[in-house]
Image (cartoon, rainbow, N blue to C red; front, side):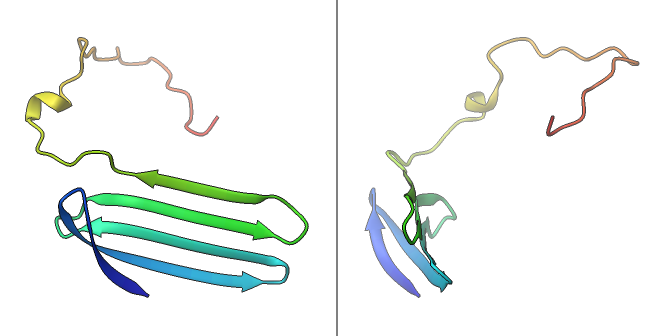
Length: 90
């Protein structure tokens, strides 16, 4: 299901989904601007007789950024060859 909304002065399209299986129920909604910016994300997962888990994220501001915003605030150093890099996920 989708709906059109306006958030932070941005025209946005929101999509939602819901499902149920056994004693569990879940709902989920995301809203994206026409420029592809994620403006909000909401979700809820309910187990019968158990806790409800919720997730919520909402943009507070939308604006333009400069390339300087992506510059690291410290010097970037090259690792010397032969230095072991630990595997990801550990």
